[in-house]
Structure formats: C-alpha cells, structure tokens
Amino acid sequence: MNTYRIAVIAGDGIGREVIPAGMEVLTMAASQGGFACEFAELPWGCDYYLAHGRMLDAGGIEQVFGYDAIYLGAIGDPRVPDHISARELILPLRQQLRQYVNLRPMRLLPGIVSPLAGRSAADIDMVCVRENSEGEYLGLGGRVHAGTPEETAVQTSVFTRRAIERIARYGFRLAQGRPRKLLASATKSNALPHTLVLWDEVVADVAREFPDVTFRKYHVDALAARMITHPQTLDVVLASNLFGDILTDIGSAISGSLGVAPGGNINPDRTTPSMFEPIHGSAPDIAGKGIANPIAAIWAGAMMLDHLGERAAHDRILRAIERVVGDERVRTPDLGGRATTREMTEAVTQALGA
Ligand code: NAI
Ligand code: MG
Image 1 (cartoon, rainbow, N blue to C red):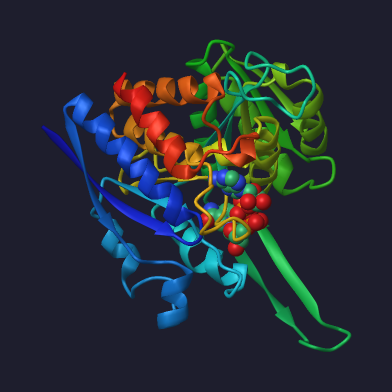
Image 2 (image 1 turned 45 degrees about the horizontal axis):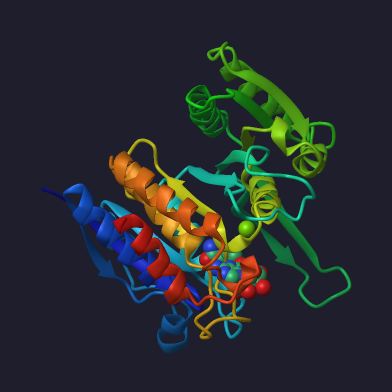
C-alpha cells in the first residue's frame, strides 16, 4: 500500500478550522482508494511567532524536504504585520522548495451563483498558471533616508529567460490537455518595456512548440476586464507572480466565493515537496466561529492527491464537492447558507461515501 507522508501547516485563523476538515476527507478518500496519508502537523504560524519570535523552527524548511507534500491552511494574524508572516514563512517555502508553478483553478461549480449576472458553470472554467519563483515578489530592494522627506523605497522585479520558459512550458502543456486548448498570456509590455518584453518574447518562442494550442497575449488590465465580461473565452491564463496574484482573486470572486478557491505551489521537477492550500487567508473576521467554508481546503487536498499520482481519488473528491454545492441544502454563509464548517464537511464525506 502506498503511504504518503504529508507535512501539515494549518497555520492561523480559519486555517485551523478548514485543514482538519480537509484531512478528514483525504483520510476517507485514501481508505477508499487503497492508499494512506500520514500527517505530521507543524505548529508554525503567527502564534508560533508570538511565542518564539520567529514564524517557524530554525532549520524548519530543511525539515519539510523529507515529506511527499505539504498541506497548508492560511498564515496571518492581526497581531503580526503581514509582511513578516508572509515573507518569513510562505514565500521562503515557495522559493526554497522550488515550487515555481502556482496553479489555481477558477471554476464556477454547478449550483453556485456567480456575482456575474447570467453566468453558469459552463462559462467560468479557467486555470491560472502563475510564476511563483521570481518576478515582482523576489523581495529585492531597499529603503533609504528613513523618516525624512527624502525617504525612498526601491523594489526590483526580476525576470529570467529560464523561469519564464519553464512556466510557459508548464502552461502550454496544461492547455494541451484541456478540451478548449487556449492559453492567454498576461503582459504589460507597453508600460514595462524590459521585463515584460522579455516575457512576451520567451512565451512566444515556447508557443511555437505547441501548435495545437491557441495562444493570445493580453495586457493584464484588459485581461482583468475580460475575465468579467467574457470569462467563457478564457481557459489557461499564464501570468507573472503579481499579475497572477491579482487575476486569481478576480477568478475566485466570479466563481462565487474565496471559500471555494484552491491552489497548488508545485515543483514539477519533483526534487522537493509541493504545497497545496486554499487561496484564502486566515479570515480573522470569522475565525473561531466555525462557519468557514471548507471547500477550498478540501479541493486543495484533492489537488495534492492528484499531484501524488492518485487521480481517481482527486476525481472522487471533486464529484463529492460538486454534489454538495449543487444540491444547495448544506452551504456555509459565504455561499448564502447557514451551515457550519462541520456540517459542510460531513456533507462532503457523506457524498464521498455514497
Ligand atoms: P482572507 O482571505 O482571510 O479574507 C477575505 C474575506 O473572505 C473575509 O471577509 C473572509 O471572511 C472571507 N473568507 C475567506 N476565506 C473564507 C472561507 N473559507 N469561508 C468563508 N469566508 C471566507 O483575506 P484578508 O482578510 O485580506 O487577510 C486576512 C489575513 O490572512 C491577513 O493576515 C493576510 O495577510 C492573510 N492571508 C494569508 C494568505 C495565505 O496564507 N496564503 C493569503 C491571503 C491572506
Ligand atoms: Mg493573493
């Protein structure tokens, strides 16, 4: 029997509510599928920071190298500045574990109402392939003349041929395996004539290797508008780190709720573990109330199983999610219902068992 060793960082706020829900569903899917998930819970996050002055153990990142995958909740707490919580935990994990793909499905599930009038499940089915290792989020820069009128901040974007090439290839391969075979590249080469012109050139080169994929580039502002006005024309969206971050929040909003949107931080070379997480944060406004939507975390768990080679278990969990949100009886408040996290999780495990 295959046993997958999974490092669990539930993190903060509703991360600690939705990740246990996901673990329950994963455990059930594993026993149905004849494999096992062995979870090791790591106590890292903002509480750990408040107690120890750091977001994770010394040598923490080396510790996770030995796992098959990482299952992450959310990191963030009003008592800790966000630039500390994100910069000292999530970004180092993504960068040091070479998770250079950030993969984010954006689908309107059957039965969920989109804030876009008249749209149904057939219209909103895209996936963002976001560059996750460099670009605008590398963290290069500095500040000088602190506290004076001359105070100056510089933050430099870094785009390399190697990283653009590998993310583009991942995106085109993904598009090749999807029914519509479309790829939209987000650019802004009119205003950013160095970095984004390199992006355009390299993406166009890679496009030539995939003649069966229909490729178009869009300026990112126009693409943002297109996601609202013509979502049915989009399939795979290829984007830099910052652009992908913003576009995927639009994607999850038009899919009905942040509470259903999953994501994966993937190292396609498999030399280090990949990491799967709901894309939402720790939601301090609802944390502790037991009403967070667990679907995003459960779906992220399904993506993790797919990455580990358990495609059938992924598909079974997705069908269970679709059945639960499609029948409208059990829904958390973000989807207009009154169900709790517990009730929604039970509905998913029931659908999985049926
Ligand atoms: P957020 O995603 O935590 O919340 C935004 C809104 O969506 C809130 O009204 C929240 O109640 C709602 N929401 C989010 N997930 C939900 C769910 N599963 N079910 C029902 N409603 C849900 O974003 P926000 O408020 O900007 O950030 C809160 C904290 O989370 C900050 O400290 C931020 O830095 C951190 N954060 C962490 C992320 C991560 O760990 N990857 C990603 C985004 C934010
Ligand atoms: Mg974001």
